[in-house]
Image (tube, rainbow, N blue to C red; front, side, top):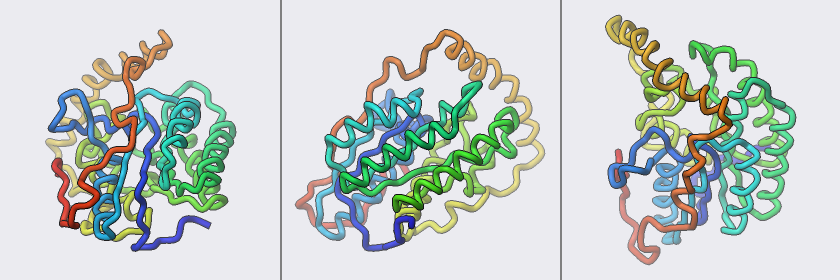
Length: 281
């Protein structure tokens, strides 16, 4: 059975592992030009607020790095996460594997389940995330079958091991291109904000914003025409370089390190609880 919704559930040691989605691309950090925020950082702030109401300390680490495959996520990142003795771990990996010309979906599920088994045995709760539905995603539409199978596998793993699931497949708002950055692979800041609230809800906590899953108002014709013009720009500036990197066997994250490699606190654990707002919206 999946993790039971419990509005009083409190975690104090959250570790996020994954790829660029969890690193936070393309949600720029206003306090650091070379760093991103992202849904996991935003979720950590929410969970910190929950811990604060119980006057408990809260630590957060983000080990995710762009370009990483699932082997990286459930390999070195998982080992580093276990050393931090977390009570909650989010695992979002496999997206880069799904983009490759061929992929062993059963193999992905097996490696992911092995990682979940280890985390659960260590006493950590686990948050998994499905891929998005690419039904209306243009050139990414052919990935829909892979995404659907991987989503089914993730829900099966979650049911077996009592994990929470961030259901990106079911978020209608993410089927709108206006939620995606210019590269059409990473979310905008608004997209990351909504996903963080969806993650908080998946963990059993109520959110103040009940519209995070609702689609944006329909785009006008001018917006649609602009989207078509931007398609050619996207192919030249994002798709072509991505293909070239794959041909050369290099990754955008080869020289990138985890932005939060150790557990850090957002507040003084001894401070009085107060209403928290995120510095980036």
